[in-house]
Length: 69
Length: 381
Ligand SMILES: Cc1cc2nc3c(=O)[nH]c(=O)nc-3n(C[C@H](O)[C@H](O)[C@H](O)COP(=O)(O)OP(=O)(O)OC[C@H]3O[C@@H](n4cnc5c(N)ncnc54)[C@H](O)[C@@H]3O)c2cc1C
Ligand code: SF4
Image: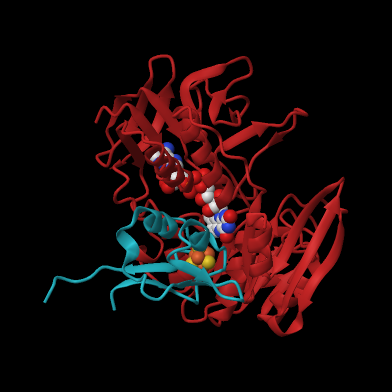
């Protein structure tokens, strides 16, 4: 698995990811963050990087793609 | 290494500062000094998931793309007249660095009770968290002195790991400063539910090491034995290295709302400060400081706006959160003792509650597992 994902056991629901990159993150009805389907590869976009830096719990994981096979 | 703009501390505020500088179009070269080999990282996870497991990657903040030079070194003094910073490198040798502008973001350091013997664990850095993790592993027993945010989070996470935990405070309840006395019984119940033994109104008369374990004695005669004792009685601004620099007023580093360092009679040219290290003078003359992530970020952004002469963004309401026994408590606004607490909404299935706190015409909020409502309050919708 490469790309963005949110570790639900760490997410505290500060919604900062959503506020900074609403095109990439959404908040579920309990207040926790999720990556929008199809946006897992958006890490290179500057506003998405900023959203990742802004998660105070470090719950957003970025797994870089390995060398192309 | 003759960076025009030097920041001391690869801190929470620093991340926001650099981010905002670059957003505002500044291409200025920025050098950041920090002697913590793990920096930059976020501290909130240290008393939460990082206590339980994870490595440096689980707390690291990624500065790639922000174009900063990070140098592992300790700042040991400043001369604001000559614009020089004294720096101690890995080789323990001191040398001078000239700065054009200097930003001080050294955060805070734990305080100790006069009664504490040397050797007690504290929790401020990633290395501290790993040390506590190792010492408490195998369900060893832990006594925690101080039931502020760090002590309460430590207690509930270590208890969940299976350690017998005693949490000791001389106050009448937990989180007294943070929650201004509200919800003390509720938080105590949750801690009990998580298996934490609480000792409030406890006057510690002695802490001593007996063989491999520790003994904490209370004034009422109780003796608490534990394998590990953690001191979590608070933190004070990390300004010791500024002694004699002329930048301190009393023992405080004062700054104005934009982050310019001020002394009793003037604004210090080209020296700025942000985050936990800063003390501010309120309009009524009282001194205040903040010790939280959101304020550190706000101050970092504000300073960048000042330096880039950009419009200032409005200051958001204070925001803090704590994780206690599987509940997330969020606080928006300033809580005052004696304020009226009204339950606005509750959902027992989710163990959630939202309280409106009113005093002197100001409203603050406390949410317990109420993230969606709190998000709406913060974003003002
Ligand atoms: C365990 C723990 C849990 C927390 N949990 C929360 C929470 O849940 N919510 C919340 O809002 N806040 C929380 N906080 C508070 C929050 O982390 C701090 O308010 C925030 O880190 C302050 O940031 P800062 O920018 O002032 O500096 P810091 O992040 O403290 O960084 C200061 C940096 O300066 C470096 N430094 C210091 N002196 C020197 C020197 N002389 N030379 C070079 N480098 C130096 C240090 O190594 C450090 O990296 C927590 C704090 C701790 C310790
Ligand atoms: S910012 Fe982090 S903690 Fe907050 S909702 Fe997003 S992922 Fe969760």
